[in-house]
Length: 308
Ligand code: MEV
Image (cartoon, rainbow, N blue to C red):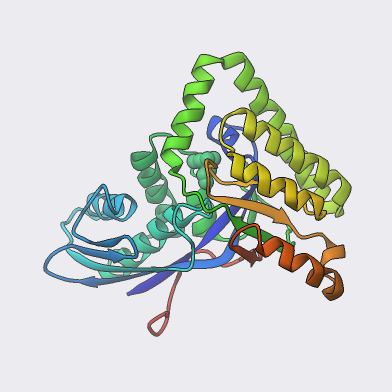
């Protein structure tokens, strides 16, 4: 059985969402495919390597198998093959997408079909097992697709083209979440106020997106990025790339846990005109590997055929 689930970008609210603040997040048109076949021993193969149940190399898939076993009350020994269009450790939700697609495929292969709500709940548990702390936002958006204001789970209309630039530095979400938690313990008054300001910025970004206000988005993305820097999740390289994007008129900030990973730029309407885009394209490509992504409305799904 093959199932797939989309990656995501956090438009605003990473880290503060772990502490109950708002986040704006959308699924994107990059998917992870999990193929699950009944077998006699567990085998997991992906671009990370080939292992059995292995909580170091394949923590998300291994926990997905374990929690699926607990849920359905039987031992399973699947052969799981992962193919993903979502770069690993890049802030684009590859971990949630692999968890969600694997849980859905396990359910179908072993005749214990899980509802979307159950897939989301199990994927969130997997995130908590691996990361220690997690908002569940990645799992939610990967399961249901679409663009959402969280934690309300309020769907919002969003159609912008987004530019994702890989900083070339990989990052581990659990480490970044732990780093922010440590800072919050050391300076609760300071960090809590930053989270509150992030919360306001997120709500203002939603309004600015709805009215297509690029000037406001510049200010709000800039403010958001300053706060992400303040809580220690930016890097010199990321700061440099964002400064270059701003010079080109593209509001930009970290997306995801930071410490490396990806930078999100909103492509303004004015740059979508071919003559403008051409002059800007070359300059952007020099900054790092870049991908243009669009919102994806379909969440987890069963693939017909071989899904490849
Ligand atoms: C990671 O994509 C987003 C974080 O806010 C963690 C989480 O929400 O669980 C950094």
